[in-house]
Length: 392
Image 1 (cartoon, rainbow, N blue to C red):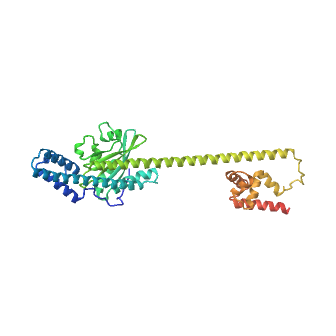
Image 2: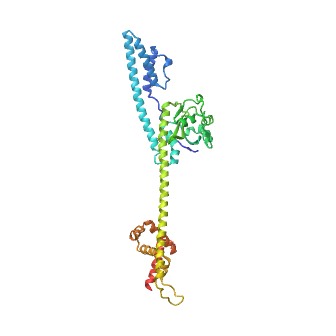
Image 3: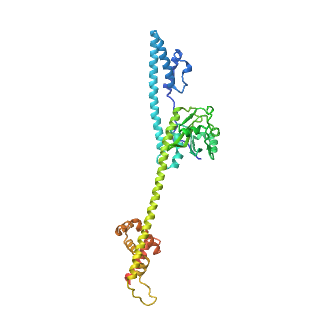
């Protein structure tokens, strides 16, 4: 478990514009005052669209019963205002949805290109920064066990969050069939809990540690199963958690799952590339050894059929060329001779029609046999030996 600091961008309260809300409520109140709709039937203040729809239905009902022209004109005028209010709300809702999709996209873009661990670490921070939440926690789900993970929170919420951080440090929560999170994992559907007192399926220990009164939880699904959970809330803000907040979190977690899978696949591909590279390197070394053994065998065959060289007095030191011939194979002598001209491994490979990797293997063997610490030292030692040979 780990925590992170404050969000990088200011939060924005997602409420209806005051002027629009006031105007629409005034229209609805007129319908209630005129007795066209019961006040008890009007939706709570948070749901303007439902209130307008209810008021519109009441006006249409009254219009069907009206007989006097003044009453009909009054009802038609009110119905026209309600229709306009409904269209305005629908346009505002579409504008809000477009704006929120843009914010979700921006939050997800912050995660692209990161490795899998960094994606998990950054996700709660970006969720708070762009989607207007005070706290966010990401957890993993492994074999029906809920493992709370990283928490991000507004720095003003440090006091409220300290018990939560302490609780989840070692928490392993079995997903019992009566728990809300169990249902979220099973059905892979996000859920909003407007009031924890009304939800019997909450996990009381973590709710008490978080000191939260309402929260949203959404699954992280990959390859047809839930592999994690997000939990978010808004302590102290006073803004209620609504269905559309749930939908925003669900959209973010769906995008998060894709980005996380991409990060995991990139890691797996990189590991495969490294294994393939290591296999190719070992194969080139093996081919170089085979080629070296073949050349040594040919040298040995030539020595068995060649006449014995004339020997000098006992104790005579062999010529320098014999020292090189005794240490290096024919191919290694070709390689070191080209090294002495300043040729690179690639150039040597082209001259001898062998791969650059094979040349590297030969160079390594030459350094070992000449007991040279570097390429330059091997070339210098080879030059001294051949110079003594020519001087002799």
